Image (cartoon, rainbow, N blue to C red; front, side, top):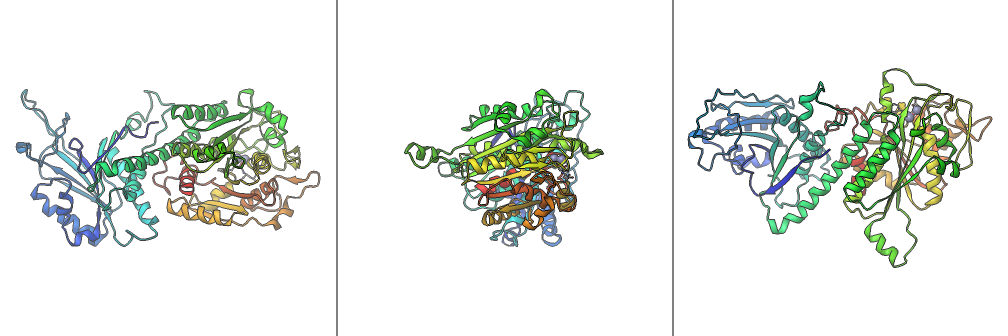
Length: 583
Ligand code: BES
Ligand code: ZN
Ligand code: ZN
């Protein structure tokens, strides 16, 4: 889906847009009244002074979350510079303004529609301006660690989106009152990020008959960014570049959500690959896409991937999608016959397009969620596409084993023994522990093909991760990667995708001993699933491989009460983390 049709910027508000978001730094209100502060950007009739004073008091004393004020202009002298004119059919009644104030709760602002008699000669004009004032507590502003403030900005962006939607406002000014130099737009970008991330919809299967038709239709058409110290010649390119990068990141989150929300109909594997192919083409992305099909996997003897995919229909046979991104810099190096081009990072993503549990069949309502068991694959693929669009400087590859874990006569059973790509044999104790199996084969592939690369995998690997975290965080475990883990945790905090580290202790390995094979895929005597699954996978890398595993089972789906702008179903958690990590 298109994120937004237009973003424009200038020093002043757009005269045709009659809604504005204005963040107010509370310290500034020591030297100026709120009325003066706001009037700098939006003409406000004098009689609003008292009302704005009340809001100001409330903001200072009661820690008011956000205020919504409807400014109405006098129609009779609408030619003066104070009027903001918009040619729309609905004329709102000109009477004393109501202000709606809420404390983190968001109420609609109500307007009474006037019965209007149209005169042939006078143009109907709407002279209302909706003001959304977001107070910012100076205590958190300009601190070194600004993660709390930035999250507040994103949440405000989400609240704004809900209000715009409720009021059917499709165009809005966002006024950057904070930064003195206009290319430091961090806070305003965070508001935009929260707002735009909240605007995601999944409409591929909706028709005119949809029960949610009215709601689905709403979309933000235009954001006008007001940068008071904007100087076209100096700032235009750098700001547009920054905004474009932000939009590409959000686009990647949307692509992830699209891929995850897609139903698990019998061609989800091919659909995944086609969607990525089309995205590369449409956006002209310098990425090589390769696909290993079932024949290739058989030749390579990737027995674990093939085993998990054994009960799938022909049109949904297992595949591995590989994306290769070599940055422009490295291509130049290559030309000068520098060292062999090897990716600094290889990202892996669990791509189970539906997890029935296999012969160890899952049951209950949560089964429907198992279409999201390819979230890891969606995250790493979408990230890499956006990273390449933003001309990232590192060489990064991504590998996504795409497999359906189905039931049926061909399906693997507990007690089956599979031979992995590494040659190790695996006794299947539980067919529902399939994620670690498919990742084990690609881990071995990467750690031998690119022994110097750092591997990061994302996977909805264990139900335990969801229960343990209550969707509050993801878990991170690693081998030879302390500093990378530290950075990932920091970045996660900064963008509100929390990561909690768990130990990968070799002591646990004895719990995976098998009588008949080299190792078993799940333990009967140890219920530390998050740790055990990692430890299983660790057996398929080299001693020195740098590897980080992130279990996103909890946050990948239905996490919008924790991350407000995460959208109701697929969240896309992981994508923004990767952007933050690689920035
Ligand atoms: N895909 C599931 C994990 C999952 C559960 C993800 C809930 C998202 C939400 C995974 O393949 C699985 O079933 N794991 C088993 C492992 C067990 C059999 C050792 C689990 O967690 O129950
Ligand atoms: Zn499973
Ligand atoms: Zn699974």
